[in-house]
Structure formats: C-alpha cells, structure tokens
Length: 305
Image (cartoon, rainbow, N blue to C red):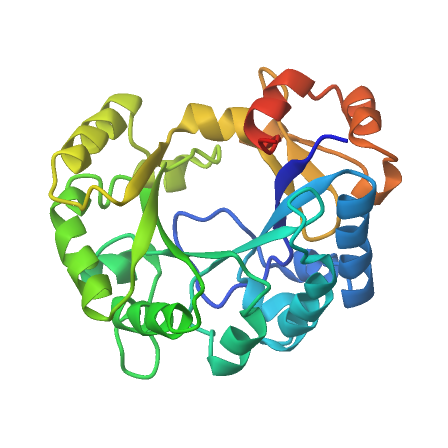
C-alpha cells in the first residue's frame, strides 16, 4: 500500500481573526464540525483504509477543537499514541500548525512522543504590522514574545519546531529585513529551528481581501531573492511555496470530514468537495470517484519509501 501525507483542518474555530485568512467560523461552520468520536473514527480510517502515515493537524486553531480549549485536542493526542511505532512503515507521523497563544505546559506534556513537528506562524517582527494581520498577543505580551516563549516550552521537551510566514502586500518588502531579528529572538530563547516555510498569499476570489494582500509572482520571486541574500543561517532549510504549488497540492481534509480539492480550471470558489472520506474504501476508490489526477496527487502527497 502507498503511504500518504495530508492536512486535516479539524476545526474552523480560531482565537485570532487574521485578515488574510478565508476560514469562516460562522455558526453553521461550527455546527458542522465532527464530534470527538467521529474525528477519531476518521483518523482511524485515514490510517487503516487510505494509507495515511503523516497527518498534519491545523484549523482554525487546533487547540480549540470541539469548542473546548486544549481539552479535546489532548484527547486526540492520546488516541494518536496508538499509532506511534518504531516501524517506519506503520508509524503515523504527527505534525501540527498552531498560532501557539493557547499552548501551555499541560498540552506540551501531552505532545511528548506524539507530535513530531510543530509549525508556528511569524509573519513579521513588527508588533503594529502583526496587529494589522490580525495576530495579537495576550496577557500584555506581544505576539512575537508569546510565540517565542511557547517555542522555548516545546524545545525543552525535545519537540522540533518550524516557522511559517505568509507573504503578502503588507510584508513582502519588510520581511526580508526582519528575518534576522526574528531569528535572533528565537535563537536567544535557546530554540533551534531548521525549517522555515514562506507562503505566497493565495487569492480567495475576494476582491477586497485580495486588494489588501495579493502580490504578483514577480513580487514573490523578488521576495525570494532578497531572503536568499540575507544572513539567515545555512542550516535553516527555506521552502518558498508559490500559488502554483498550493493550487497543485490542494487536498485539505475539512472539519466536517470531506476533503477540498481542485481540478484543472477551478478557482478557489469552484474547488470541489469529496464525500465524507470514510465513504471511500481506498485511495484508488477516491481517485476514481472524484477525478483527482493520481500522478499530481502522488507528486505532493506520497511519502517517500
């Protein structure tokens, strides 16, 4: 059986309201979120029937899945322990994306031996710029200060860390100059980061939002060139994810159990939805019934042997 990797957006709930994010947390969206039992059942099906051996949990904010801050996510972590094994063929690699503001010692302890990588968004070192994005701190600390504190909390437990940054109109010129200060803030706390991913802002067919954040491919290429010429340590592996790569790789497992995918010619508003993934007996069954190009899917979602 092929081994796959995928993204499971387990909740649409979020404690932030980032302006560049299209995710809705309307009452209808919240009501459609799977209950805990169904989430665990879906994870089981992804593993046993569809061959997923890496699942990246995101949201919304993963730590408020089920509307129960931290509580339900810890229950999910406890379930995921059953899939951790030293056999590389059978082991389920677990990753998570978080804004980190709700992460505490209790969650961090539950992550030990379960979560293999945590990615945290840092889009700027400038507090005012971060607030313009919608990223704010809590308890009197700035967003960056709070994030660095959480990164230190996880690093002390041996959990690898990664930085994510969304690149758009607000920061594509300033972020290359801020990378060193972000890095120094992280390094000063005793945290070692070996991966940093930069996402080009992706259009959501929303003219007002796109006007505030959209950048051209040429502007993103210029950003890449500037970052590559900064003094970011060589040991940090930078990945620049363009709109084209995001389009080609789109397969988001949504909070209600279906997956969002794109066929040729689709825009964001015309992307497709699978049935509940538990309806498919195998990935071959899914490819046949949805029209997803298996070669393109494998290029982005097939785990190397």
